[in-house]
Image 1: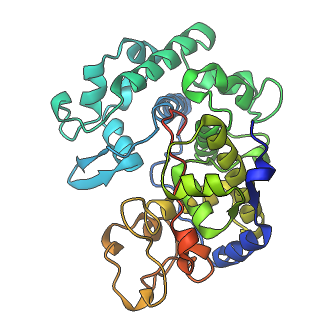
Image 2 (image 1 turned 90 degrees about the vertical axis):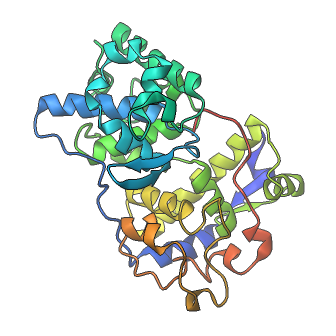
Length: 338
């Protein structure tokens, strides 16, 4: 891998500044996580989240109306798929066809109306997960947890076993720590060593970390490529993500939030105030203007932030006052990791 220190560095002072902004905030419970009432529900929830997390990459095309609510991205994926939670067994997933997946992820269960892309890629991930669960774990995602006795890290742990599945093979383990964090939080997979959880690094986390100054880009060529959204190599992508992961560790320590809570916070910030579809909602004079996004902002829905029409990091985030930081984007790569 490219030597990260020569390209990027964690700005610990800036991470501390941002962490202080979060000390008065709380993150609300995740509305999608269901605490199982019995063993049957526990197995069902483990299977459901195992498969759904496996196909959660680049959900930009996912949007539509489910039960009268317009949803996008992860929200659309979860709300649409929950309607057929009984489908999430190894036997059913192994037999799934493209038409089944498109029907599952459509507003009206009509495959012809599905908004999802990369269908064959996602279908292959489902098939691989089902096949490996049937071969090695009795067809149950719970079997992975039971084999490692609830340990997240170390030899024979969740993070050692999950990369056997193609969908969970990311070297930086985004989907693995996301899955483990959610199932630990919901009581489905209580972890013996939850202190080893890391923030899952996706494009939202990268965008916020780079624009805010949590991570400083030292290499002029990389800075240019990020600002101009030019494609970068897998090696560079992993270097940026590793630096963002390290910076998130620093903010978590200083904020008083759990890893799970901070993950939710930075993710919602990245898809609300600092979304890729519009200019960041920050900057001088911003608080005097009504926020155009308030009615659909998931950050204020997910946290206790009393929003004054401006991002929680406004004035502290480098990008809120400096165009050079404001113009950073996440790495431009085609990947199934996130």
